[in-house]
Amino acid sequence: METKFQIGDVVCLEWDKTKRFRVSSHAVVEGKIRALYFNELLGVIAHADIEPEYLKIAPKQD
Image (cartoon, rainbow, N blue to C red; front, side, top):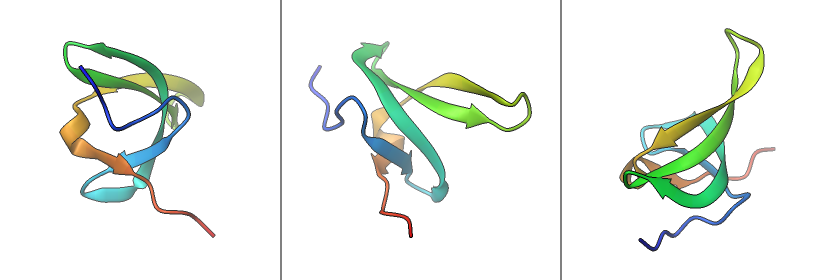
C-alpha cells in the first residue's frame, strides 16, 4: 500500500489541527499509519495506528 506520508512527517487530524503526530513507520498495520504522539495523561511518547484518510500534513506552527 502506498501512502502520501513519509517517516518523520508531522501530521494532524483532518478535523483538529492541534492534535499532531509524527509518522514513525512506512509499515502500515491493517491499512493504518503508525505515528507517535505525546500522551499528556501519562507524560510519555506513545504510538497510535490511525487510518490515513483521517490525517493530513500539519500546517507550520509559529
